[in-house]
Image (cartoon, rainbow, N blue to C red):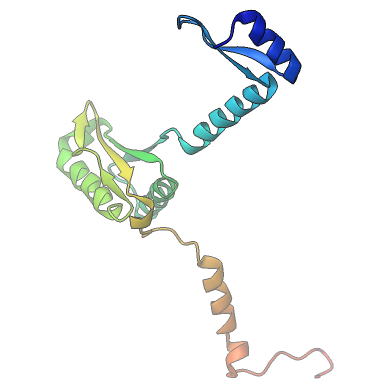
Length: 182
């Protein structure tokens, strides 16, 4: 423990700063250090904590009861992609007009969605009818347990394979010749 004057002279001797760490203590706690380096390290720690703790994002997908199969597949691919990236997904099935008379069909559709996405996410709660819509929240499974069902990341490879099995390469037809017959 040093007095204020002694601490200031010691800090000047070393070419460093006298920084008050805890002013509420009795006596106040100070450190002799390079203040610029101290601020840099604080900013670096704060940046690392922000990088490691990502905020949970929520994506919302809206459906209607009479969705076409292709549109259903596109929506499921989007939901799967969002959950693959670690985002939560809210599925909302909206009823229009007299569709409210057929809530059972809507519930079956929401249950089908939950079952189709069960390989990549888990439902937080059971589907609920709120107003004129049925809502379902899905959270992604841990990264090592996720399995994709709808995404087609390997499509370019499949296209190349289909080009290799074309009639020109399997020998069933002769290769095309130019105008001179060569």
